[in-house]
Image (tube, rainbow, N blue to C red; front, side, top):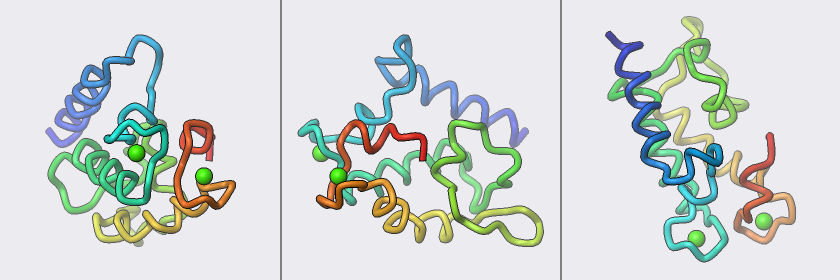
Length: 118
Ligand SMILES: [Ca+2]
Ligand SMILES: [Ca+2]
């Protein structure tokens, strides 16, 4: 049942993106004011919506059950002994991951930075 809602969530995520045909465009989804840069606030909000899809209403997710495309958002978060990552841990990792992604250190993510593999 849990797995089922997860798959439906990802389906909605992909269909929801008008660019699904061209692949998964993170920039278009995260840059809510469409100024070509993703701020920490936009990044955090985007991650939050990602949690809604991946966790499907749960307070924690099993790292091993996440789809490949989700794993970057969980990078560097240590799961507990049961292999679970909590919503709080996921949210707390946002500033660190944002900083890592902001290669030129200008305080926002451009298209290349947000689409970089890491
Ligand atoms: Ca923006
Ligand atoms: Ca930057």
